[in-house]
Length: 402
Image (cartoon, rainbow, N blue to C red; front, side, top):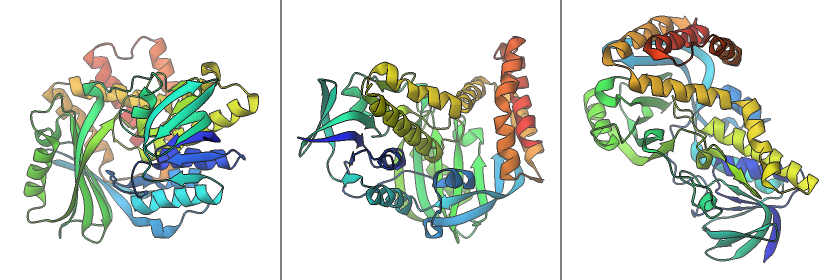
């Protein structure tokens, strides 16, 4: 059996970026991918912020970017707001994006094997024995990056089952329609379609877009596919549908995404934005932080659970607070009465309409949230009754958008 410092299961952005980061620090890394080709198949709206690309890549190739958008449209029933976001984000070609990270990894020494799924694993003598459909390997640290409800983490005793209220059932079509504008990104929260979720339109350039819908299946009377079909029939009648995709998105991070010799990243660790469903940024973040944890543990010759806990310490310093606040907001919105939800979105659309939001101002506002919440908690206002919950949302919105 060939031995590596680190073995990663899954060649998505989280696993590949973890492998790439670790290899830059002279560690031997093997990535095992179950599919035949990196970047396929993918369920993703492909949107990402410019800030994310700047944080994780020195020189990001422009050919991987499908399109740059500059206007945010938010819809709620018959109401609509228009916000200029000239430098906020882009639409990626996810297939090329994943392959680009894979190329970075390979060029730094990572070995990637496709069509080789992990089918079992166990610990022996403080090592991880990883079994695939073709081979057995040994690693000091195993990183599970194999997506929703990770099977690989389960091999080592981690319960990755997702509660029904913490998962979105998603359906997405790639289509063309004359009404699609390549500069407009749309979020539609109209409850007649997605009372417990939202619909998105992410322009890929020209008149082509990723149009999808995510709902909480335990609360929705219809399947995501059926609701999306109704939405497209109403808003994009006679659209030319190029591709159909479906999948699931988990939105409540694992409380303990680690154990002896083990780290769990990306969708496998349920690191997805609870409000937007965005996963690319969190995949890169957790991949990098897992690699830093693995590097530290190997250098210290300490692969214990205590050493692996450093991973969650890093996540807490990074963006766990933001994920937790989004999760609380998601729960608040789910429990709101229709009248309260109407009032909230009326306020949101009013604050967003005809504004311009620059990325540096947006992220400065985000960074100021934690201190605000801590002060509010001291006065016992957080999450106590619907009036306070609504107040919290208004405070958040004003801090973010005004």
